[in-house]
Structures are given as structure tokens and as C-alpha cells.
Image (cartoon, rainbow, N blue to C red; front, side, top):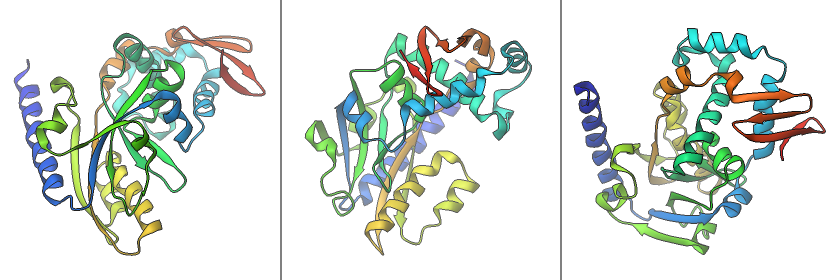
Length: 271
């Protein structure tokens, strides 16, 4: 293993331990719940339209010159793409995940987050699209920071679940070679989460989502919160996945990595 990569992994592991210990030391009334829920249950609780989300990614490529896009992908660094290329980036990620989940299954956990209307799953909306719709898995596994004052009776309690009470117990839920990055924050009604997201990383958005939900229930609060994120292997996607190899169009039908779609009332539907 490259020495720089080894040092990075050791550094991430050390920071993980610090963040997780802070949470368990200060968690108060918060509980960290591990859950396993059926795919169809997860699908029914999300706050966005899965089918429409996939259809939009397909429609964005429908009238594009895929060969020209191939050249662009090969000649540029995906990490440097601007916001105008976000849809192409998400499509390549979707294609990569189809193959990865098809071959390896789900190898990482989701985090369940509350939204104003329902719930969302983090990290990876794209991973959720693949694992529930495109390559549906039998069940989804994840973690939920639960405070009874905010969510009196979360639906996950009706399925297989257990409370996690320590660092080793939490880390043992992940593959040692694929540990995510954990982040801890003592969330209050005064925390400037918008500043945290903009000045650090969009991966900190769970803090903002959590605070927004907490504020709909409580005027004042101080709630310890733990979140995590993993990184996509963008270098692999950038050099190994080409748009023309991922999607094929044939009039009102198309195919993504062997998954067929048909355009019905301007929506691309999996068939």
C-alpha cells in the first residue's frame, strides 16, 4: 500500500474514534439505532420521487452526442467539473453503482435522516435510487440518531433494530477497509449550520437537515448529533465509464447497463 494512502487511512481512523467517542460521551437522551428494513418499506418513506429522479438523468442525455461526451470524460478531471455538469456526474455515478451493487451488493450503511415531510437516506441519494429501484436489494441497513422528543415513534422500530452503545460496536458494522468518515456536532438552535456546510463540505449537510427538523419541533435545544459519509471513487468512474457505453437509446426506449426503460408520457419508466 502507498505510504501516503496508509497515513491517510490512519488519520481518518483516528478522527473517527474521536468523533464517535464525543457522541457517546455527550449523547444524553439521543440513541444510536442500527436497523434493517425491507426495501419496499424504505421506498415508501422517502420524500422524493425515485422514478422521476432517474428519468431526469436519462432525459438529460437523450439528445446529447454521447461520443463527444466520451471524449470530454476522457480529457477532463471529474473532480474539476462545474455545477453545469452535475447531471452527467450523477449519471456516471449511477452507472458505476449499478455494476458495483449488482456484483457486490450493498457494502455500506445508510443513515436515516428526518425531513420536514418524511425521511431521507444519507449518504448517497444515487445509491438509494440503485438499491431500491434499479437493482433492488432485499433490505436496507442503516443507522438513525434518535431523540424521542423529535420522533416519538420512528417506523424502523417495527423492524429488526438495536441500540448501539460503543465505539467498537459501531465500527464493527462496517468493513475495516471501507470505513466512512464520522463527524460529530453538538447541535443547538443557535448553531450556524449553513456556515458549516458552505465553509467546509456539502457532506456536512446532515447537520443542516437535522437542525431544520429539530426547529420545527423545539424552539430551543441542544442535541448531540453524529453523521458519516463515504467517498465515491471518482477516478475510477472518470476513466472507466464512458456515457456511450453506459446508455443506449432506441427511439422511445433505452438501456442502462442492461436495465431497460421505456418513455411513457415523457417519463422514462423501468420495464
